[in-house]
Image (cartoon, rainbow, N blue to C red; front, side, top):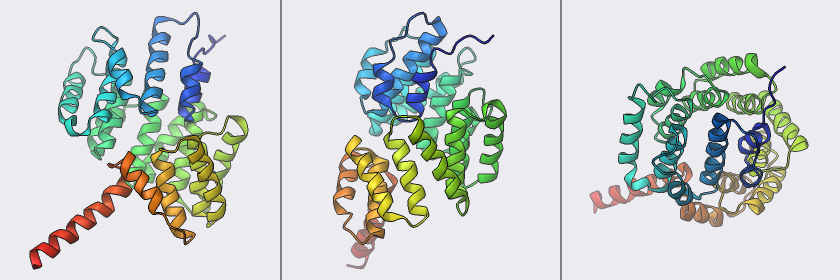
Length: 289
């Protein structure tokens, strides 16, 4: 008989965006040393998701296990976008070390960092071999960002063969359905609906349902879902970005949401794109003047 999975609920909370619940319910007895490290990684990644970068940097010291050091690197990378070169240099150094370079969490963090950098080929160098459900799910995300839904579908099939009912398999299926579009949007909506019936409602689930609604032209329902998500976290970048898009479709002002997004997440693509267009316009005006 398989041993009980002591981390099942903790992982599920993390995957579905219940970060505070993951932290609050992490005091689990009788964990093996490996499970204890995985537990700590999930807790610190939850703190990162909540924006508590400095707590993670302060608490993980140099004697911690490799997976925890990798999580600390992620916190350093996200906390200081102006000094990310040194963090990326450290990451590459560790990945080149034969003793630790193949660690699954280190490869996962590398994939997340290089995906943030939009260096998808470099990300796949470290994630493509898979090995964990999280690595497979990250591959699906990377391939979708590369507009290669065919490769994403292959990764999803691998996940389905391992565990069709796994939360990450269901999430990856929903992401792919959204990317493919058309009749697949309804399937994605049903996956998020199923999550909302089984688990506490989170910003991730609400945003998933809202994006499906927008694809189907149901902007009023999407707005209701997004405002509920905003009540849960007023600074969540995806909620704010989706509210900008939804408001525009409803003919409402989106300036407040865009201002909040600029203040809290100046690196967000929705902020950077108009900014780069404005910068280009300014340069063009100056060159003519």
